[in-house]
Length: 291
Image (tube, rainbow, N blue to C red; front, side, top):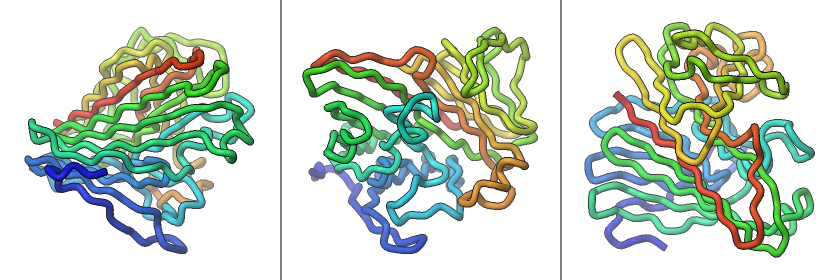
């Protein structure tokens, strides 16, 4: 359903080897704009108001045929983070076709879109759970907010992990620093041992894959002439990732040298999985504010 006040409308994009699933573009009254693919409920573009510069990284080698996850933007990781469990890597939400809910222009001028994923015979074949997941996207001014809501619609409890795998575009990763993590414990993804980060700033000079446990709600990605504030709510952890040059060369759908143009700062719930009883709901969100 589309609110008659809104200017957002579904659109079609073609790319890769075939027709892409539907895409929705939302535009706030002040000109802030975001693009979301129903394939994966995947935010692939965000430009703040008054800024023609893209603030999310999207690989030019991404396929939009609905067969694989899109490389870049904000993939939705659910119901499993990485390979930390028996399900396919990063779960199935990022490769599923989501339903489009309300697209609206709010009274304050913000633009909203809502996408919904429910369990199907295909999802129950790999994860026997009845669920409803809602992804809400809002843009206004210099902010992009993404909210994830998970509801147990069945009679049995289930457990999950999740993340918003946000690829933040940078001009050169060698000049990027992440502030706010000092004193926080982290582990290398896939490992369990914890290390305390005692650095004033986290530099992304090569391969980096860390899960920060009990991370601060507010982090800041700083470049020479701009910054990005990353705020999380409901997500207790944060993941910082960049493949580095050697591993990036083996990623088929990543642009050559693409690893130099992004840093992933992910709102996540990983260390302690969420358990929902029948009828219970969990909420988490991430807000990006561009300088």
